[in-house]
Length: 208
Image (cartoon, rainbow, N blue to C red; front, side, top):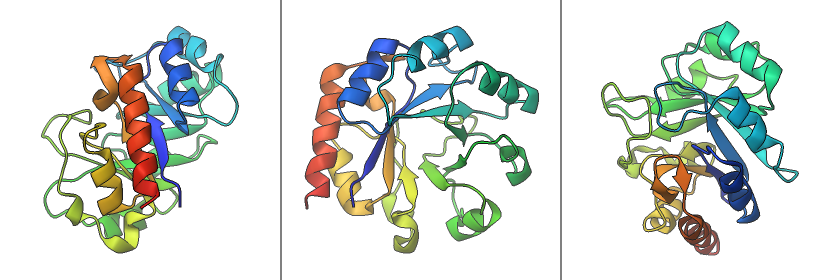
C-alpha cells in the first residue's frame, strides 16, 4: 500500500503547488486564528484555485464555532475537515464533508475507544500531546503505542521530518502521514528541498 502524504500549514499558493507537484495527496489549511500558520479566507481561496486536480484540500479547525466553519465552507473549497481540538462527535458532523479527528497521544489514551466514539470519522490523526498546545509541537511520540490493528487506518503526525519519515513509515505503516513544521524554512513558509526529501523518504519506506 502506498502511504498518503498531507503537507499541512500551507499559507502560500506557490507552496501548495510545490507540494502537489512533489506528489502530496493533500494540503492542509489552518483556520485556527492562534496558529502562526493560520490563513484568511482570501489566502485560502488564492491557494486552492491554483491546485492541480486530485489534490484534497483539508481544513483544520480547533474548537471552532459551527457558524464559523459553515461560513468558511460556503466561501472556499474544503474537501475534508480536520478537527484538532476537544470537539465531541456531534460537533464534527453535519457539515456535508467527511472529517478526521486528531487525537493527541496523552498517557493512557485508548485508541480503540476513540475510534468507536468517532465511528463516523474517515480516520484518526495521531499527534503528540503537549498541555495547552492543540498541535504543531514539532515533537514525536512513542510510535509503539499505536496498536498494529489500527496502524493502517490512521494518519501519523507529530514531529515528522525528512530525517525520520522513512523510519516512521517503516515502523508504523500508517495509511498516511501529516507534516507541517518538518518541511519549513520558517513558520508557514515551506522549503522545496525538504518537501522533496520527505517524499523520497516515504517512497523508500513504501518499497521496503
